[in-house]
Length: 426
Image (tube, rainbow, N blue to C red; front, side):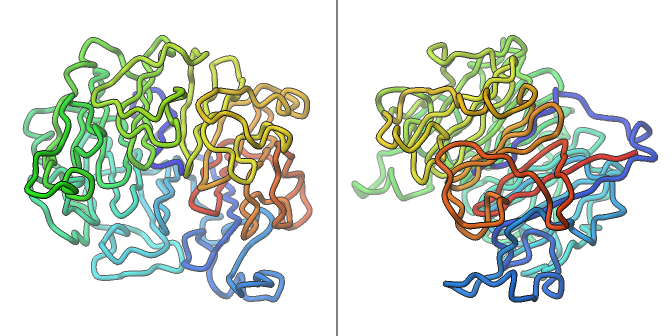
């Protein structure tokens, strides 16, 4: 799943340039917990009822009514919750947040879009981990909330629940200006305006990138299940100090970074061949992934697969091909997971080069430069937006929204089994 992905170059955008722009936000897929932003009353008909489980599912892109007058800058999909940042610096959340990741105090579930009003600065970007949230402000400060037992909040302490966003003071004291954040399972990464990376949280499997392997506990299983080894405040990843990093993203237990030349670096858990290698090798510090094609614009990970978008608009995939999430066709169902493959079907059906990609749990999505959307992989709960639940082993176009109107968007984001797309209008 695409966790906390930020695809803008490292800069903080002025709010002036966004005046007069509004966004149309579409959401589809499983909508049970409110994470799509659709109110229960808006998805109450039988057409939204899963015929097997009875769960609430939206099978085609449906406009999120409560965001119709908002200008959306970014969306982040976590595990059962979603964050929305407006171009005016406000941030909203929806979904389930029993650990405080919604940033709404004691509220544990928000079935509709709810304003987080406790951050005293304008927010420019955000990230959503499995159970925690990160917010970056215009001043370059980082605020965090949610589950923090492994240090992923960067507050210098460990605690089970932080209900409202708190500023990470260690970065503010050092006058480090953060412009991007990414979040995974129990850990976080932050990128400064000088291209330097900081990580904090669980150090298991090398996911912090400091070249240290956790272990040596009292019990033989401790290095795999314990989170004793952690960083509770952001720590500079020194091996990347000389690289001008411009992009970061987290999988569940690994990280991708791309420098100004489009060279990709990876570190952390190598399960499901996420680094495009023949072996499932953990990387305890950043390693240049020179065996991958590139140069890269975007790298994102789902449940057991990875998508890469080159600067030339080509999409490559690798990992486990469950339900067709690699998009290489059913005849290639047994494709070797560590071998990067180009999604050739996109070259045939996309009208323009691809400009944006997203990865859900076992499904994938792409947007071309004309705003047309393509999806493939697992169709459960309507995650593909095609109007049905059938799995797609190759990309198909999402031709229209729920109203039957042509679907054209600028950006797309994927959660566990739901997706959100944004179109900007002046």
